[in-house]
Image (cartoon, rainbow, N blue to C red; front, top):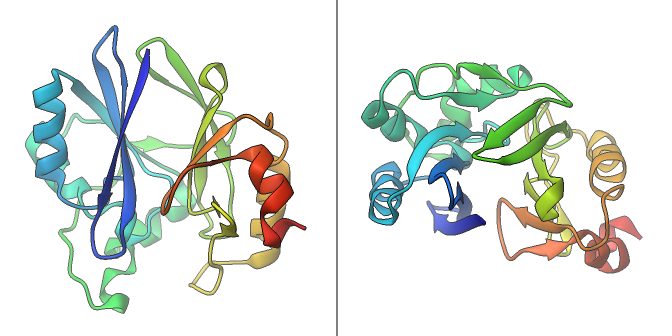
Length: 210
């Protein structure tokens, strides 16, 4: 069974996901937004072994907990990011622009690319490059479970902002059309902020997609 624990963390209420294959107890953290220690403690209580960090994009509110987790689990912990977002990672996700200071973390060791396959235990995830919110934004799609971890590309009733450096509204909409709306309607969308939704609901009700 693929288990998903959601935490709402940090100053802008970012969704962090702890995702585990309950049979193997292997887990990853998707977008460690804040409070790395508390995520680790919860994983330990559940008996889950964190095998990596997957970052949808390198804005500060999606990676502020990474440095603490990396420090506690060691340099060998795989951390995955698309290389187009590496410059943003290296300036702590632009935290200072918003008046925050976060701990710097070593560069990610896994370079994500479109079409790549990642794995949690026996579950396979397809990496889809979805620029527009940031140049290196990706989503993680598990076809067998009909679920997408979609960061800040699309939300329940909204879409990602494009007014920050590297953003492009036209590019974002193309990413949504080609990488989100091509999925089955019952595919769950677990976004970077707010409640989950589905492809079908957003296709029918999202005012930005009408």
